[in-house]
Image (tube, rainbow, N blue to C red; front, side, top):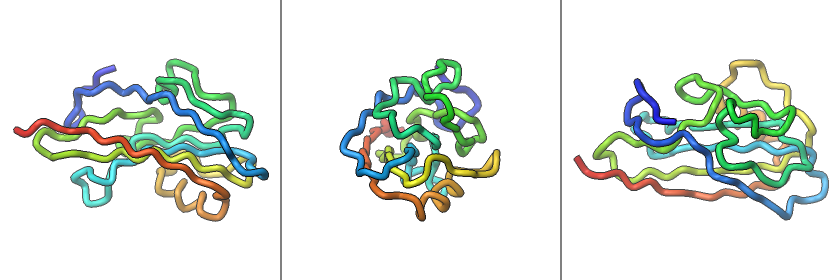
Length: 148
């Protein structure tokens, strides 16, 4: 799905297939976040954050970040991203802004559910996660933007 009205839009808002394994014993749920530390905002850019993913889940299908697909497991909660949409926004850095890194993080948690106020930001999720992470894996993708 192409975006309109968002700076640098033009990419597809489709999350990749994500698969993980080797979670430690005691894992009771997962959280997945996608963050661009290179966004020209002074504070990066949160593309996607989802939590309360059941411990029995080991992968998310391509396009799970689109709520219209129904691909997230029951009970998983998507937080509003930096444009306040409860969905994933794909890579689309502003033209001429250089390469951007996209940090995909899967966190194994020691709790079955996190209680976070509706409408909270991914930064609040990160703060809440810090006391519950028992393992974490990251994958960093790079989007090369054409020069202007």
